[in-house]
Amino acid sequence: MKDSTRLMNLEVVGHEHEPLVQPIYQTSLFRMPSYQTAVSTEHQVHPTSYYTRWGNPTVSYLENQISLLMHKDKSLIFPSGMSAITTTLLALARPGDVVAIASSLYGDTTRFFLEDFTQWGGVVKVFDPADAQSLEAIARSCRLTLVYYEALSNPDLKAIDLPGLSRVCTAHRLISICDSTFVPPYMRQSQAQLADIVIMSLTKYAGGHYSVFGGSLSCSSDLQEKIWHTQSLLGAAIDPNAAWNISQGLKTLELRLERQSRSALQIARSLQRHAKVESVIYPLLEGYAHAHLTAAYLNHGGAVVSFLIKGGTADVATFLESTRVAGLSVSLGGIHSCIEHAEAMSHSMLKAMDDQVLLGSCAEQPDKALIRLSVGIEDVHDLESDLLNALDTL
Ligand code: PLP
Image (spheres, rainbow, N blue to C red):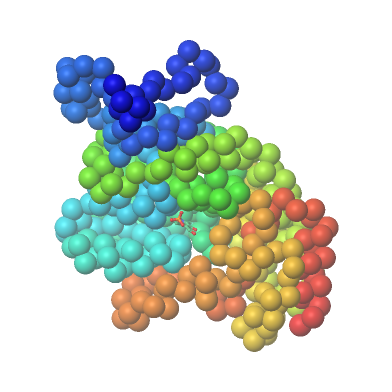
């Protein structure tokens, strides 16, 4: 045989070893030991070693990690959080189906529901997730099938009435979907079940280092099978290298989250005391409006602190350009502190929407002057003086 042929057939090294870390199976393809195995694998749901768009051992390892942490039977991994969200809705909803969405959601999620999902024939109703009665009213008035909310809303950190929403969903046999990006594992009380399907953008806390994109969902085996079929058809498969990167990040999530939450609370308190700060929103801060709701499911406050500076939007740009430790960046949950202006950055897509659609829907837009800070793992005193010095310049 020629070298070129032998090179293609060189055996993979490592079968006989037991690596401590899940290896990266950076391959799109697996060789089948027999024709019979190939034919039977073609009929399997989510085979792990056949064709990477259908499954991959490195991706399966990450799925297992996520299922363990989410206390769910099964998980699926996606190339981004948005991919997990859109694939789930495409898999579960049919034209004419009514979906109730929470009034405050990540900007692209709101836009997806109000623009794209409705173009496919879905009907969207908006409810207040802190008030289960508002969901009950929708469930009584139409044939609702799915309910969608965020465990803590982006960017205004609104909480959900978890027991109330669960009661309504059970009574009306609704499938609940919760985006738990702002409440990753360890931040949630471990037994609190947020919904039938729990989605996360792994780009945030789980990856943790701002080096990778990913998304996940966790649910029962039945729902996973159904959604996997749509996932494979849409080609929403993560690259094994990205899955591995997130898998490593997850191992330090608990340590990072504890430190970030401790620092975030300290910073929320100092911001609240500063003369230039109008108000601060943080789940564990004294005076937080939804403390009676988060007691049912939160363990930690998390990394995100949202606040308003006095005088509205006039000083926002000056303030954001004055911080040195906190970088002007749009993401959250990772080890670097990031600060952003929600209306102009993470939620700017709402401004691009048709006013009729947005305003007619009752979906909320962030306060024009709202600043979202995500606290990293830098020394808390350095970060605190950075923010306070920037406020002093105003
Ligand atoms: N859900 C929430 C709450 C988010 O904040 C984001 C992104 O910021 C997403 C979903 C989308 O995640 P990704 O950027 O990984 O697609």
